[in-house]
Structure formats: structure tokens, C-alpha cells
Length: 288
Image (cartoon, rainbow, N blue to C red; front, side, top):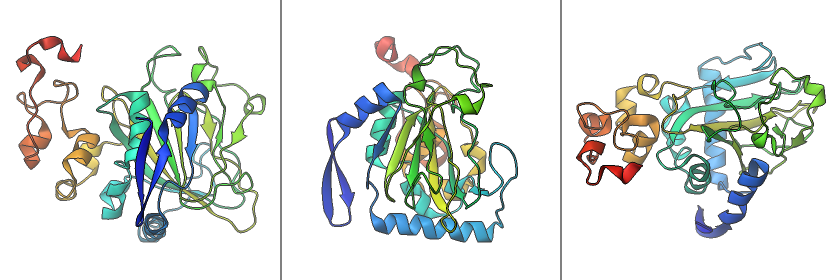
């Protein structure tokens, strides 16, 4: 788990993931610089622009999503290129280090912060879950930088160590919360614990649109933010790999949750390899 090769064009770059696992545990976030090769970054950025035009996306004009921020949701339903994002091996290993195996795609969206946008309200992505903190991790998310992320153009801001806070006050005055800018060059990925406070930064530049992709994951026992089962058309889901279908929630979590007549939906609907249902295991404590 300490080192994994990263396919980058014709080269393989060995990344020390162990250091990033430690940063996630200690600080609640980590940045893997220049992880994604230029060709994929270009393809994703081109598709963000295509979809914003095709879907006539505009800012949603609310306090959370912003007044000069354009978001496009449910990206897995809108283009083959997005299938490469949830399964990126280094990111997925870091996420599984927080959430454990059989985590799920919670949501996948692009976020374009234009000049003049103000800072987003600091928040934790798991704060809607009605359980006391700190708690077992339920969410772990990643931000892919399709452009450079700088303090000036609205880089995501994080609060180091906030994933360990006990019963935090989400209504606190944002001015009292100290944040740091997660600056990173394009092609880099920021990964953070779902309890880590963060938010989009203010874009005070005059001509830079900060474009990122929010790849959000949740534990297998948590309901997904976007309904992957209904939001992705069956004919599109049929083009996914078995791994991606499992990430979308079409397998059985720990051999039980999500089954249909003791079978996984992925097996029944798409012929993916069958899973042995929990009660058919010997011993039954395999998942204990």
C-alpha cells in the first residue's frame, strides 16, 4: 500500500501513497500533485465546457452553490470519459484507506468558479448525517484540478485537523474559522476526510475560471448523494466495467445489503460475476 505505479502517458511514476495516507489521518486531507496525465485533464476540461453549453448550465444563485459558480451534476450519465474518474487507482486507494473496501460513488460533478465569486461557507460533507462526532468515517471526497488551483482564483480552502473536532458548531461565524488554501497545479488531486471542514475559495482574479471535478465517495452503508441507480440510464450503465458498477452500488455490501433474492443487481442485470450471499458463507463471521 506504500507505493503504486501511476500510468502517465508512456511513463509510470511511482508515488509514495503511504505519506498521503498519513496526511489524511493526521490532517484530514492530502494533495497528490500532478497525478492525472495531461491528455485526460484536457479531455475532461473539454467535456466540462461541452456540457455547460449543451445543458445551458448557469450559476444556481444560492448561498452554498454560489452566484458565479457553474456546476454540472451526474457526470457519469453524460459521457464515456467520466468513467475514468471514480476508478482512478491511487485516489481510490486513498479513499478506501478512510472508508474501507466497497465504498460507493456518492456524486460526480464539475465546479467552475468564475472571477468575482465569494468564498463558500465552510462546511463538512458529512454534517447532514445525524450522528455524533467524531464518528466512523462515512464520506471521503476528492477534487481533481483541471486548471491550476491558486489562492487568487478560488482554490478549495481546508481546515487542517477539523475532522477530529468533537461536536462542531456548523452555525459558527465563518470569519472565526481559520482556513488554508489547497493550492495545486492542474492534474493534481486533493483528497479529504468527510468530516474535514472546507469550502470553495473566493475568485479574486480578473480572468481565471477555476475548474475542478468533485469526485465524492461514501461508505457502502451510507445512502449516496446522487441516485446512481436511476440517474444513470441502463444503456449507459451497461457500458461500465464491473468495478464501476460496483462503485455505483450494484453489488452487495458485505454480502448482504443491496441484494435481490440473494443476488447482486449487477449479476442479475448485467451478468457480472456472482457474489456469495452472507448467509451462505461458512463461517458467517467472515464479515464481522
